[in-house]
Image (cartoon, rainbow, N blue to C red):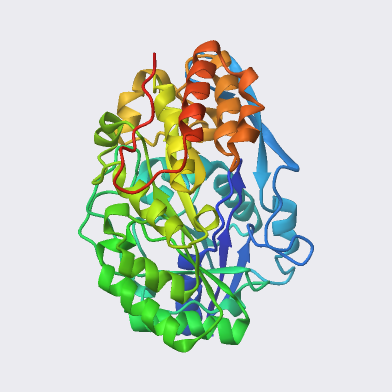
Length: 452
C-alpha cells in the first residue's frame, strides 16, 4: 500500500454552485488505483439532514466591502458548506496523510481554502499539500501564499482517463457531472477561460455509458454538463443523446454552462427532448447590439429569442426548460440592458436567470472597471457585492434590481418597482408595457423600447 492521501473540497462564500468535485474525484480514483489509501472530504456535500443541498445562509463568515472602491459600504457574507470543526470531525484520530490534495475553483472563494490549508498544516506538519483547480491555475502567484507546498496549474492529465468512483464520497450526491467538450474558441469579455481550440473531453459513447452506469449502480438520476461551450462539437452531443434515447432510461440531463443559441438547431433540441433534458442554459446576454459586441458574443439577439420562442410554440415547457442568462451590475450599463433583456426573455418564454458581474483579473471587463476596483482583493470581487457600482445607494438599488429580474412572474417584479430610482422605474414600466403587448413570435423585431 502506498502512503495515505487526503483530498479536500473546501467551502464557498456567499455563492453556491450546484456541483460535485468531479476533477478531485478523478484524482482520488487515480491515486487509489496507484495503491494509495484515499480519504476524500467534500465540505460542500449534501447529506441526509440537508438533502439535495448544503448549509448556506446560516453560518456567518465575515464582512466584506460592497460596491466599488470608495463606496463606503460593508456587507455580511455567509458560509455555504461545512465549517472547519466539521472537517476535523471527519479526520480519523490515528491516521495521518503523507499528501493532501485540495481544489479551489472560484477565485473569490480562495480564503476558505487558505483557512483549511492552515488548519491541515498544523494538524499534519509533515504532509505535502498540493493546491489545484481553476483559481490556482489562473492566479498561481497569489495561490502560492496559501501555504501549500505545490501549486498545480491546469488539468491533472494523469487522472483524465479515470472514471470517478463515487464510493470515495461519504454520501451519494443528488447530481453528477459529465464532460464532453473541453475548451472554447471565444474570449468573452467577462469570462476567465482562455480562448482555446475545442477538443473532446470524453468519447460520447463512453460518456453515455458512464451516465447509465452511475444511474444503475448508484441511483443517481440527474446529470449535469458543465462544459464551457459544448455545442462547439455538436456531433458529440448528438451521439451521446441518441445512446441515452436508445437506452430508454429515466435519467434527467442538464446543460448548465450555456448552449450557444445560434448552434442549437431544432434537430438537436428534439434529441434533447427525447433524451430527458430537463434544463439548459441559454445565454441572451443583452438586448443591446453594442453590449453583445462588447461581450464578444458570436450571436445576435434574435438567435436566443427565436430558439426559445420556437420551442414554446412547439409545446416545450420553456419556462422550466430554458434558463436564460445575462450579466448585470456593469458600471454605467443602461436600464434597457437590465430590464429590456429581462422582458425579452419573458416574451420569448424563458426563465430569467441574471448573473451579477464578478470582474476577474485578466478579463476585459476587469480592465474596463480597473479604476473602480483599485485596491480590491480577489475575495472582494464576488458579483453579489456589486464591486463595480460607485456608491452605497447604487448597491442597494442593484439589490432590488436583482430581486426583481429574478422573478419568473413580472407582476411579482412590478410589486417591487416602487423601490427603484425614478429613471429606473420609468424604463421598467415602459418595458413592462412592451411585454404586455404579447409573446414574441420568431422572425419579428425582438427589440424592446429605447430609453429616454
